[in-house]
Length: 188
Image (cartoon, rainbow, N blue to C red; front, side, top):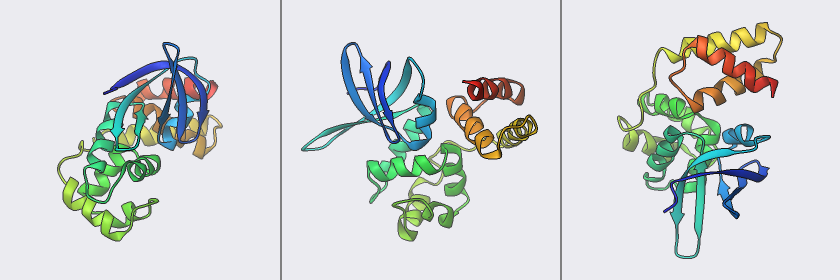
């Protein structure tokens, strides 16, 4: 089983990256949220879930262990396959998924592609208490970082996206650590 890959992205498209590692090109499915992290970098690292079926082997890659573990939890729910799990992670961060599950917010989950009311309710029942608990102190840091970037002249959407991307890499960052990393990512 492949668990981690570090290499040079040869082709990056929304939802898939061709990653060259040691002269071999691996096609890796990724959530849309990872697209921005992969574009324009000389070398990237992804945590991999190897999905084996009778007729194919598919690699799913994630920028953080939390995302990979959330993906694995999602595909453990009856009726949720890898494509649906990637779609869920493309729409919500692992913390937002945990919030929705713990809060019983089935409408928030049902709004995602491939998730209906029944599947959303099943996710809540089967995953309640098993996903990484959202950390309360992160919300103010996230909001403050977005606000600071907007005050510096960046669009609210760009600020939200970059802060979410930086927090996916390391969800424990304080505002003083988060803001410089977000600015660095915006300047690239």
